[in-house]
Length: 75
Image (cartoon, rainbow, N blue to C red; front, side, top):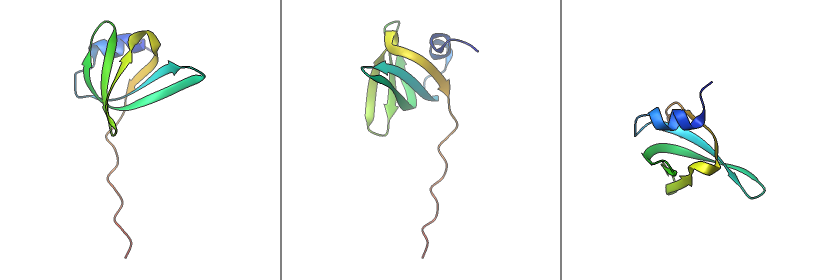
């Protein structure tokens, strides 16, 4: 298994990812599309907007499949 830093450095921009970061009291995940990266941070476009995460706080990252299609409404 490769490190999250190697994955984030090698993944093409636009890849759908989940990135787990350390926050006070635990961890949180950012699920969305990889939009930018630098040595110090990574940017993920989530449903709620663009979030920038410090690389120092990243503990895990991986590619995730496309979101499932919404179910048809029952009538």
